Length: 204
Image (tube, rainbow, N blue to C red; front, side, top):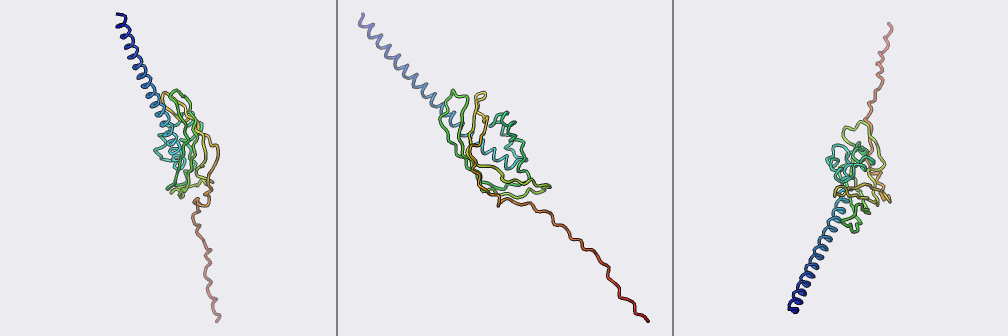
């Protein structure tokens, strides 16, 4: 009788051990998946943050990307930076540009509320012209800066937002020689009309 009880207890301990191991494995998988999700979300959001920022800075007027900014940045940052309302390049029509964003991202754990990310963002080969209908041109010495940045993310209601964007090192390439120069409308030359002199009458 005792022998049978011993075997039953041993079997139950064996089952409990297997269940515990399976539970720990499941928790580990869930933890790993959640960590990967948070890390990838930050990576994608960092890319989007610079893509939309560059878009609205280069094309500040009638840009649909302006309405997307509040899903990427916090309200406090948008108010502080004026990103959604700035019109720096409104006098120009940006036809094309090349942007490269390299995100140096570490691991973001599920319990984190704040994450800092290093980003190298370069905008170059900007092709622009004076905006049609621009009455007064606000000339700029650069359309947008390039450089190494630190992005600070915070988690709000389970969603990550950019709370701060700091330029650590400016690496902007001087392209001022390629900037379109506004030209004045040609002035009409008014020549003073001198009446033709009549020949003197011959004396008789």
